[in-house]
Length: 186
Image (cartoon, rainbow, N blue to C red; front, side, top):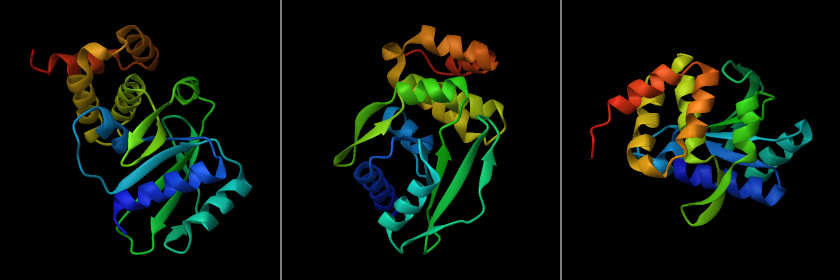
């Protein structure tokens, strides 16, 4: 199974089970920015413990749920990891946090076509805000590049007051300004 097939299977299962979700991370930035390959899919879920077991059951034996729950430090939430049995692709399931921006981006999520189906995804503004937040948190260098790609592609369509407001709150405004300044005028 490819990573794309695995991601689509998770979307289908979440839709079928009626679990509120949004596809985030690099796959969300790919929808709005410059496409790059990835070895994982990230989802934010509003899920209860019993629903996690239902999700795993719906996905079947191709997926292995890591029994060890981890902690995501930027938004302060828990993370469950689903791995394809062949080990080539990982699906990270983040519990919706009480963090104000996590709540706001979840409320603002939109339906967008992913392959041949509609899926819940964050707005491009919220992708940028979260990517800059992760970049500042030291997650990895690709996050700032992803934010840059979304800004470069979406440019004049973005709600800059919304982005600036959250970046001011998160202490990422200087990083945002640096990223914007690095994009050639077009």
